[in-house]
Amino acid sequence: MKLTRMHAAALGAVALAFTATAQTAPAPEVQNAAAPESATAPDPLSSAAAVYATFHGDVTDIKRNSFKSSSDIQTALEELGGQNSEQLTRGWMAYSALVASQNPEFRAAVRDIEGFYGKDVFVRGLQNDVRYARSLNGGNSAVRSALGAVDADSKRLATTAAFVKEQAYSLQGQGWAKGRVGDSGAIATQLRASSLTGRPARKDMVSAFSAPGIDTVLVSAGKSGAPSIWENVSSAASAIRVPDVASAIGISNRGIASGKEPIADQIATLAAYRVIGGDGAAAAPMQRAMTEKQTAGCLNMAQLNLQQCVAAAHQHFEVPFCIGEHALAEVGTCISKVSK
Image (cartoon, rainbow, N blue to C red):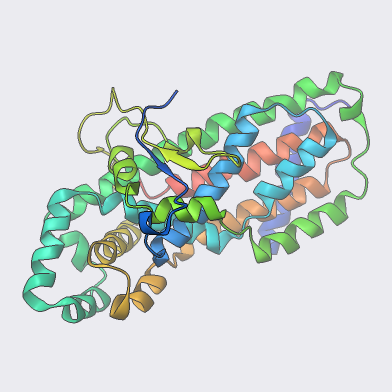
């Protein structure tokens, strides 16, 4: 069956109906820290952000390589479709907070209050009022930096999605791509099972986010106009490089979308925990603050859409449409909803 753009739209419509009822880069770079003295033990934010980095490494692999076989398509499907929505949300929140924590005015305000009241009292204040951290000097600017970095990520996902979906049409001339998918229902079921477990963070990404030089990358990622830091992160990469920020100037001007202020407050709170250190009394509340239901729900819906789209596919060339639309474009939309 030839895939037309009308057919592609129909695949997406089926997915939506189902889910409605279902509920060249410059140095320096942060290397995989092999020497014990070059890195500290990963804190909760670093560990969670490494999951988000691993996802983007998989995205880079797909962005750089066209599908050459049905196994290439299946690998991409398993990697992107195997993400756990809650884990990926925690990773996105953690990365956003790490970028926000680089704001010098915000860092100084946090340090001043911690120095005056002590860490334990400050932690209790952050727990008692989720809006407190963003009200500090530099709080809003810190969050805007995070939103700018995530906006770059969202655009990257949209670009990759367009590249992948176009292959749903170009591959129709390839004999192997016209082959039958097989038991597409079983594939969709396996995707669902994989998403419940999630994909673990790569060890080199955990090491990179725990390395002392990671702040150099993160402060650049938050600049207005800076590209996504993930362009040079792939499944084979052992470093996170500073993005080319030649055209980037100052703090991002991204605003907070209406109704998304609570998420912005959480990002600022997590950033404050990062500044004072996520150990001791801060460890448990930091873990709780990474939980964000709206984005997790959006990502879960994208996964359900992906699973049903795959279940409706008959030939291999149809599957890239599902990947591009639901495992890439929808994910980018979910993470961009906080900003405007």
